[in-house]
Length: 104
Length: 114
Length: 239
Image (cartoon, rainbow over all chains, first blue to last red; front, side, top):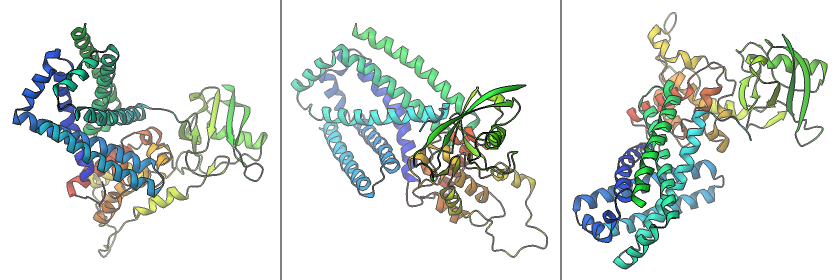
C-alpha cells in the first residue's frame, strides 16, 4: 500500500516539478541554462533541496512503475528477482550520482 | 490476441508506454549530467543541443511528458474519489488540455529557436 | 425483418485437429434475434459439432459469455441488429479452450474462492433473519447482481499478462462481502486482497466496466476498496 501511495505522491510532486523544470530548462533563452547560470542557481540551498527531492521522486516513481511491469510480465521467478535487484541497484546508483552533482 | 480498444484501455496503454520511455530518458539524462563537472564538457553538450533534430526531439519529449502527466492525474483523481462516471470525460478533457498546452509550448519553443 | 448474417466462428476440435480454424456460416435471422439464436440455428441446421454453453438464454445465468466482434458479451443479450453483417465469434480470451466456444473456467472460480465468497458471522443467528437496513443493502446492491459470467476478468489486460491477478470479478465479490453490514470478516478479506496480486494490480483500465452484462461499474468498486485499504492502513505486506 505504501508503495502504491508513494507512487501517487511522487507523481504529484513530479507533475508540478516538471512544469517548472521544463519551463526553466527548455523554454527560456539559452542564457538561462548557460554553465554560469546553472552553477549560480545550484549554489542556493533551497534550489539544491528542490532538485534532490525532484530527483528522488523521479527515480522512485519511474522505477516503481517499471517494477510493476516486471511483476506483471516476467514469468520466470529467477529473471524477475534479478531484474528487481538490478533496478534497485541502478536507481540507487543514479540517485547517488544525481545528488552528488547537485551538492557539489 | 485481438480485442477491441476503449477510451480507458487506450489511456492506459499511452500512460504505460510514455512511462517506460520517460524512465529510460531519465536514466540517460542523469547519466549524461553526471559527466558535466567542467565548463568545457558542458558547453560542448549545450552546443550539441542546438541541433534542430535534438530540438524536435525535445518537442516530442514535451508531448510524452504531457500525456503521461495528464493520464496520471486522471487515474489519481479517480482513485481519490472523482466518480467513475466521468472517466471518459476526464480522458477527453485531458487530451484537449494536452493538445492546447503542447501547441503553446511548441510555439514558444520554436520562437526561441528561430 | 429477416436478413442474412455471416457467422465467422473460431473452431477448436481437439479430437480432430490440434490447431484451431475459422468456419463461416451464412444464415438468415430476424434482426431482433440474438447471436445465441444464430448459434443454435447453425448447430441445428449446418454443423451439429458446434459446441457452446447456454442455459437460461435471457441474461441471468452467465453461461453464454464469449467474444463477439472483439468484445466480450453474452450471446443471448446481443441483438444481431446491433452488429454488422459479418459477426466474428471467439471463446472468452486467455482461458484454456476445451472445445470451440467452451472455455475452462476453473481459474476464474478459484479466484472467487480466494476471497471467501460467503457470509462469515460467528454471532448466534437471530430468530428470524440478520437485519439489514435498506440503506445498508443499497451499498452492496450493484455488487450483488454479478452473474459470474467471466466477461470482466477475461477482458482485463492485467489478467491476460498475469494469471495470478485476482481479477475484477473476485475483487467485486470481495467488495460484496466487505461492505455487507452483516459480515464480520472484513479484515481477513482485506488482507487477502491487499496482497501481491490484489487490488493494487488494478490500473483502472475500465475494460471490465465496458463488458459487464449487468452494467456493474466494477472499477468504481475496486477504487472504493483501495480507499478503504488506505484508510485502514492495510499494507498487506506488498505494494
